[in-house]
Image 1 (cartoon, rainbow, N blue to C red):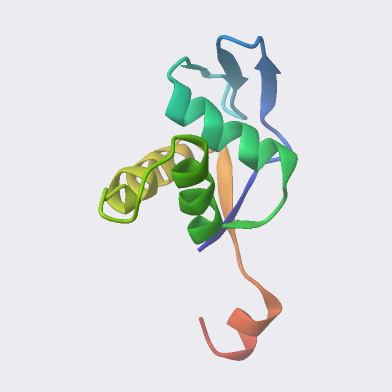
Image 2 (cartoon, rainbow, N blue to C red; image 1 turned 120 degrees about the vertical axis):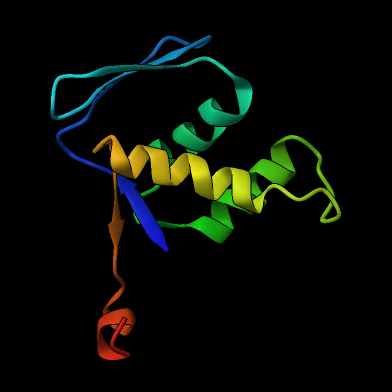
Length: 99
């Protein structure tokens, strides 16, 4: 899955917390290191594959592959999609392959 922050989302990164205003007008606060790391990575990049996000979190927090984080990160991303803050994007190869 490739994701990016929706253009309609307003993001205010204050260093120790990230405030997000969604398209629907809801405000969200990210203030833990992992969620801020993920969101900052999405801010710096566009159309990011979840595998790259997982690799980034492993790198930043020095986690080996025995430490399972995939489900937690996918849950966080799915919550952000449900809150209308990020969106899933399809690569042209996905469309060609019928996904």
